[in-house]
Amino acid sequence: METETSYSMLFSFVSIFVLMFQPSMCSTSFTVSNNCPRTIWPGTLAGAGTPQLPTTGFRLDSGQTVRILAPPGWSGRIWARTGCEFDSDGAGICQTGDCGGRMECGGAGALPPTTLFEITLGKGTDEDYYDVSLVDGYNLPVVVVPRVQHGRCNATGCITDLNRGCPRELQVECGDGVVACKSACEAFGLDQYCCSGEFANPSTCKPSFYSSIFKTACPRAYSYAFDDGTSTFTCKAYDYTVVFCPPATGMKRSDDTLVGQPVDGGDHSRDQSLEMASSSSKRSFHKLLLLLGLLNMIMIN
Image (cartoon, rainbow, N blue to C red):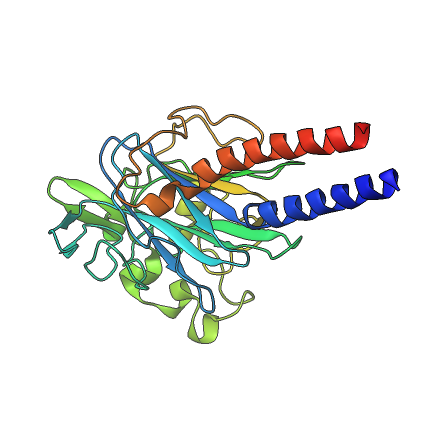
């Protein structure tokens, strides 16, 4: 009888444990870090059929980091805007990556040219699919490092400053410098560069002189629409660390430490919902220790 009671209590505690940890185990976070020497304004956009993230646009000063939770199955993109000016109502404009002239993009996409991190999160045990794309051009270097509990996954991104070597006909200038590099599709609007019309399939749309420049500089990034083979990656991660302006030391695998600006700290006060991942993780860990202690006592008795 005593044994039955112990196992009944054990089952109850295990049930509580599962219910308590199910949301955090099912969620994935994006840890967005600004390693650039100046302020950026990251933007987020959800794909069709998935909800917008808790924030769709925010300010991120140099050295700051923000963590954002995403629901299972979320699909969308994250990018960085540069040279922005917003008023107290959140209205304004950015030199690159603008999304409808608002701080919060609110469902508006990035105005090309912009470096994009694109991802579709798997549900349950399904894998995630992710890439860094230069199909819409380039404005900032970025590296994406998946964090996994078991196994290894590939980092991806573009750590080269393409603005420095951007062909003149693709350059976007502002003031005294080049702030972005257009794709050939954006610059010339031709089907052969846009993979449209008679070039709307992999057999007819091939790498161009311009996309080859992007690919040579950033071999893991999408350089044109059908550049799938070396540009799309799969993983099952609990976090994707997205670092803008990473140190030019090369990309590392997910279980290695990323050299450079540490991915912690930062001012999260602008939107408390962005802090939920780190604080809930600490609470969950303490709950786990308590539950394990109780379970141990039950099994001993």
